[in-house]
Amino acid sequence: MKKKQIAILGSTGSIGTQALQVIEEHSDRYEVYALTANNRVQLLAEQAHRFHPAAVVIANEAHYDELCRLMDDMPDVKVYAGAKALDEIVEAGPINIVLTAMVGFAGLSPTIHAIKARKAIALANKETLVVAGELIRDLASEYHAPILPVDSEHSAIFQSLVGEDANPIEKILLTASGGPFRNYTLEQLGSVTKSDALRHPTWDMGAKITIDSATMMNKGFEVIEAKWLFGVKASQIQVLVHPQSIVHSAVQFRDGAVKAQLGVPDMRLPIQYAFSYPQRLPLSGERLDFFAQKLEFFEPDLKKFRCLALAIEAIQKGGNMPCIVNAANEIVNRAFLEDRCGFLEMSDVIAETMQRTTYSASPDYDTYVATDAEARRIAAELLVADNRHN
Image 1: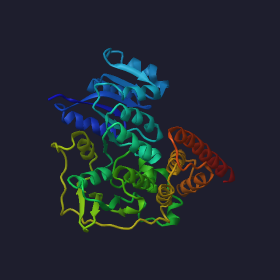
Image 2: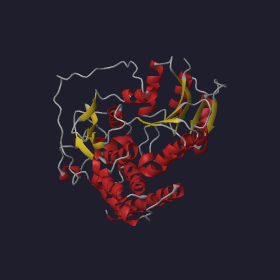
Image 3: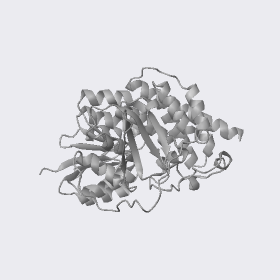
Image 4: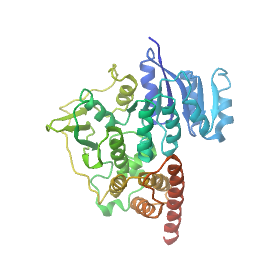
């Protein structure tokens, strides 16, 4: 059997490193063609030595010389740097699957290039669909490029829909852990710190997505992502806070039947399913014990978790508004991690940026790029103004 060649965009992050575990466990089926990272050059070189890809790319060109030195003993591995190199590497002929595990807006351009090269997309970069869902949907259809969701929630929905092609969705039930502050009051949220926010009760993720989970912006992005992945209206998506993270999401059909995917919290499962679909391969690890804990479900508090409300407002508005929200969120998320913004102030800055940034009802790719730049500038200016007032 010919091995599938996989390019991993963001191989040094949480999803990327777990994807490499899946590839290692099924080395008879999968092979790494390309590995990329933004800044973690040492880990990228270590991964290259272990998996022997055809190429490695460091997005931050400042690290290129260091990466070349670290790869000096592997002359057969091509070393590239920069955003253009990311766009070009995904087009390589041998690649079968591109796992987009980069964080943020930066994942949009290489994903578009991979789609146009007719590669299968294992999508873990939710910002791609948040920013440009309509564009990505249309391109994937035009170039016949399958998009296989890797987020645990969207993978669960995808798995629940297998065999249901002719049956319309009545409702998507999108589960959320609720993050570390699920039981906090609004007053308590005003004084939480980044160390508090980085202690996620269920999942081990990178810092950016962990903060997004704490604000529930991550869940708002997943609502937007689900709309484009599964062709439903935002009003057909219901968020359920499920602290145990056992029911990863579910689909309700028009006869009232609900199909859900359950399992222990392990991102290797959705990664592997995206690689192997429609097959299910063996996967080592813990199995679900139905007697270990009860399953609970709650409505999200949109007043406490305003970021979720803002994301829902953005998809209802449509156009480039989700792009504006994403850009502002990337700015305030980084500011919070750098102690330049309070937890509740993040949503204030995002809401104000939504008001001030130029709105476009029918954006194209160039509009998204311009919108992203404008919203980032406005959000950054608002943060500086807030800091001056404080």
